[in-house]
Image (cartoon, rainbow, N blue to C red; front, side, top):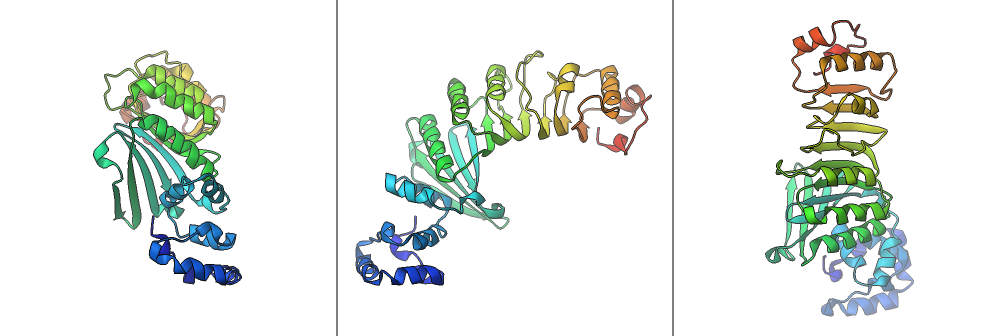
Length: 324
């Protein structure tokens, strides 16, 4: 956080300066203490405090709100936080909280780590016109402290939903259930969810199924997982805008009929040509998957697919030109 004595009071809007002028005597006294690096922000009129908050980045706001119950209360009174998106990351060695600013031009990430050497370190870089700032915080129990901070951030920024969740399902295997239960207790839906694993020898079926059955996903689900069971009992979210399953061997014909998404990408599926033929006929006749607008399949040889699946189907709206 910038030293408080450097806050740009003279650049405040006229209304804020007008409020400040009503307490000029106390302001002069505050400025007289600048050599001690003291500036009692909470003594300022609310309008002036709000203008000061607008000069802070999300990490500075979080740090300010953690000082005391009073600073937390003040931080919660700010009305402009809706511009921030909150993304949560669970991956090897770190648990992150990312806050994306207007038009994603500023990204601030609070990183919990078990590496003592990284404690207190911060990094800032500019990439493609976007400023990215990262701050590291060491913890002996990063998962628990991360959950506490997530609760605090969602409260301070008045978030009714988690904008993005990226979770490596084989990162904190022993604590996956605890993390998923945390999301369940918060009762905050996830707008966009990305699930993956690094070691495809690991069996993550049970934890993935528990997450899908416990957490509401509103917008999109993207999975890069090696699901071992054909009869996987995880529920695919309904009314999605996007569904991408990188390894869809567990998506059989019956499960395919249950998919409710506008855009669907299935890679490496094991659905037979006969079943695809039947599905497409039902889809065209509006007998199933009525919300589906775009279907993309991978590992399909177009000529073979046309000969064995599309041979008796009259294509409409250029559907055959879609990427197969």
